[in-house]
Length: 231
Image (cartoon, rainbow, N blue to C red; front, side):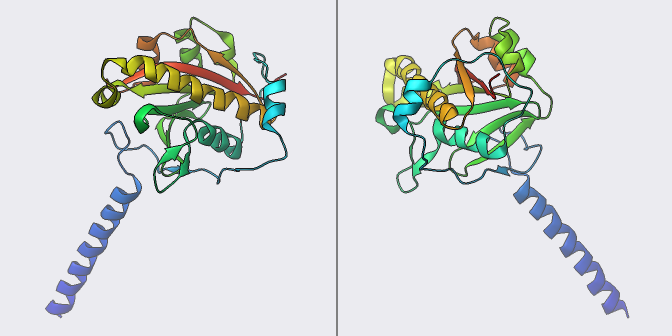
């Protein structure tokens, strides 16, 4: 009888430990070093071919600033993230936009009504960093631009300056500014191909954007792109 009770106790402890390990596995630490508030959100596999030509996207791209109150679908959000920083060669880790010396120091964030998200290129997934809507605060950090406050999703392109400096030296900021331009253009053209609108925002204040997103010290905010369903 005592042996049976002891075995049941051991079994109960084993189940508890296994459950805690499972939680630790699912609720992994975010890139910010803090426990992620929710499990990673897997994004639909990106499309790498369509009937919408690159030439048509180039010819019809225009900055849009007025939006319908319609959120992006998860597929649209995933496709835009992939266009910006997606992995195109898993073996080498090469991405959709070029990076000097293959540093790949850019990190992409997305803000919408559901919160603040960090894109994970290797997993093609999002990690949620905040649950509150911070688009208005981001718009204020971009000198009060209304198109940021009212867009469906605002993308913030940031760069890990210390990581880049290791390989690029003093030229790291100039190189990363150029790289962020490649990244933003990919978002703009992909938005057109998806029937969406987008506008690049160059008036963001780094310190204020960093505060809105609560970015770690290593990251610098370089560029913002507002996207949505245009009116």
